[in-house]
Length: 171
Image (cartoon, rainbow, N blue to C red):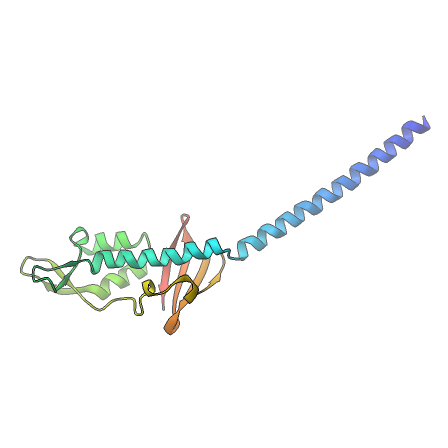
């Protein structure tokens, strides 16, 4: 009987110790997960950097790709001939406010004899983000929201929306 009592006591102690240590492990895991969401990894930074580059390339696709028949007058890409199409497309890479601001910058009231919209030839992004490399920029924030600073104190704010980074402001 004494042996059974000693055995049950030892078993109880072992289970109590095991239970306490597993709750510490869970607390440690939770702390680690919280730290991971706050700290940016190199992969996160690369995704953010590349998202801004792709976004600027999309602006170039719409406003810097085509020219009128004279070969020099910049016109809007014929696939995005009206404001709604252009803003809708840009909204995949920018917040709607930024997309509208970009369209407003480029849109003019002038048209070619063929009826194509002539766009402002001055780039929206000065200096161009495409002229940078990842080592030239400073990325701060977390996985959900961050800022990217480039030369001339230009700041891009980005946010994770539907598992994709979009530019929410350009200052």
